[in-house]
Amino acid sequence: MQRISKRAYGYVLIILTLLVGIGFCCFYKLSVGRFALNSRVSDKGSGNFVDQAPEGTGTTPSLEQGKENLTTDSARIIFLHRSTGEIVWKAGVVDLIRRYNTQHHTQYEIREQEFPTDQYGWENLPYDYWNIWVNHGNLDYYKGQPTLKTLTKEYDLIIFKHCFPVGNIEPDDGKGDVTSKKQTLANYKLQYAALKQLMHKYSHTKFIVWTGAVPIAQSTTEQQAKRQREFVRWVKNQWDKPGDNIYIFDFYELETEGGLYLKPEYAQGGGDSHPNDALARKAARALVRRIIEILQDNVGK
Image (cartoon, rainbow, N blue to C red; front, side, top):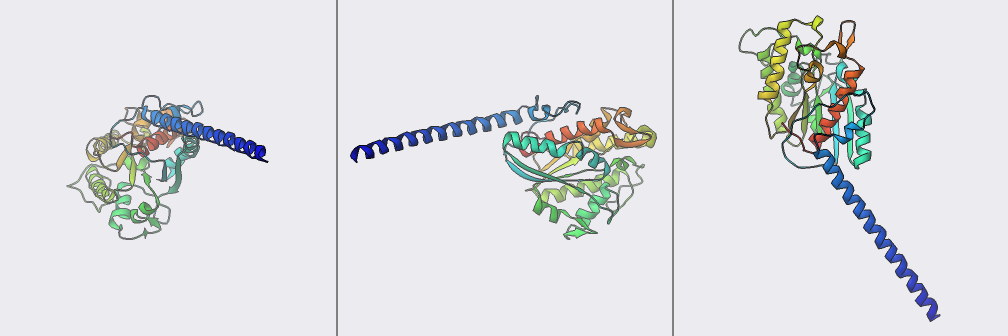
């Protein structure tokens, strides 16, 4: 009986030793994985996760660096868009986010929403964001559209954009009027200033603002194209400031590559200013990389 007890005691010691060894291996693997995650996200040159996307999806443009270093492994993301954004969304945004989650054990949840819906009207110009979010920001919803009062309660990162009609900018006719629907640089700047002030009030939420989609050359004038370029430069170089909760995704640069118009090889064709599949895949990869770097706070202005 005593020999059986000693033998059982020996078995217990062996099992305990094995369990401790397995636990140490798991801890070491998890630690190495976490270190590798931080290394990958910090490596701006390679963008390892994005580089593993299917061939033919284009290259990701280099992104600027800076800002704070507070990391997070989970976030709720909403992408507000109309037709151009929908094309980019369907080009693989969800799959790329899921792949990153799988590889790096993160929990980034992203969904899309048409904004504004037809209940309000199709326009998603600076005036419309100002009208819904600033002018009626005391409400939860305005004409069926959620205000920031509602969205910031549900999401950690809010992405919004303008479609290419934002480029139909007319000459200024005065100092500007924040309440005006007229598309002028002066009005745009006042509406953006009000939007920034509102977004700063929701400092716990991050925002990604797309630079405006641009029409093809046949659908605009050189003067309008130059005004849009001026507005984009103002947004990037003056309106956007370091150290806050607002970030830029430079979709305009992806579409124009330094020119004034949507490049013909990136357009749908037939006079359509929507992006084709090649540009959509390229933009989807660039957007997801931008999202991840911002959530990890490894990139800034």
